[in-house]
Image (cartoon, rainbow, N blue to C red; front, side, top):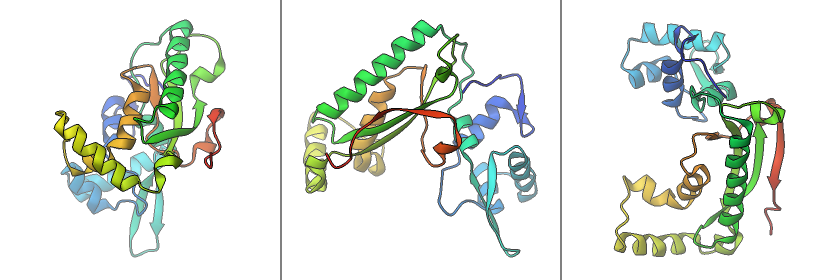
Length: 221
């Protein structure tokens, strides 16, 4: 998805709106006005106004509204916005090169056992689907899962490899990164620093978008 940095979204400059939705996690129990206010260090009155503005434009939706408490959650429109690019469009030929390189990385991950996770499905959506003309980015939904050969003893294997990594000088920012590096490494390599490749952080509701499944494997194999 491409956004014009000169427009406004929910009353905010587009890039500020993108930054805001990027800071809100996709939590199953949603967020309240108080949570929103605390996260962005603003008053609850301003928080409510801002939430309602994003809701009116389809970026937030009510998760709970029973008269006693109200909570919202992000929509797929918000997920797309969080990954949107304000960069200039690239030629179709350039985009094709990035796309083919991405697919090659999918194969490499799936056949290289230094990766404990594999890619099980990829869905393409957005402007690249048109097949013609320049594009701002290549929008993708990506599903990953533990490789079956590692599933039975995954924790032991992860801990063993973590010790080797630490001994070789790798450092993790926090415990969460140390625990989840097998998945994070796959996602980082899929992106591989390409500004053209845009991988959505969550796949929930992908069916709402026009898309094409471009890669899929049987999870049991």
